[in-house]
Amino acid sequence: MARKMIRVLLVEDEEINRVVARAALKAAGGGDVVDEAENGEVAVQRVRDAAAPYDLVLMDKQMPVMDGHEATRRIRGMGVTTPIVAVSSDGLPADVDAFITAGADDFTSKPLSKEKLGVILAKFRLA
Image: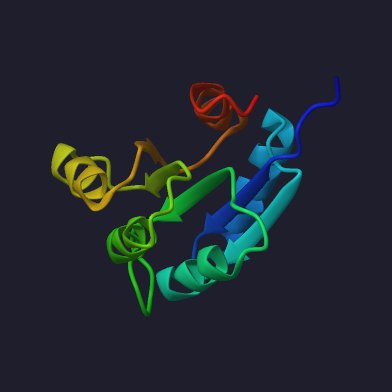
């Protein structure tokens, strides 16, 4: 049986972090289709306008226009159940709790790596 193509929305304002995340996703086996959004507002639009649901959303915390907390709340407000994993260099318990309260399913710290993404993909049965 062929492996399902995995569609990921990568929400990150820093280009270098998007490059690292794309490479790590590919290495972990989860980067078949990676759409990008440079801020939360664009992420909400991409989720709303997607022809098919994403399998995973990787959501940065601090971005211009709309931050990751608000974008996560809005995506959940649309009834979307796609796993959202918060990604931030701020790993303090209060930061993690704020993302989970906003509707994120999990949290991982930057920088993203093949190993971290492998765990995430396995957790959500995408690997």
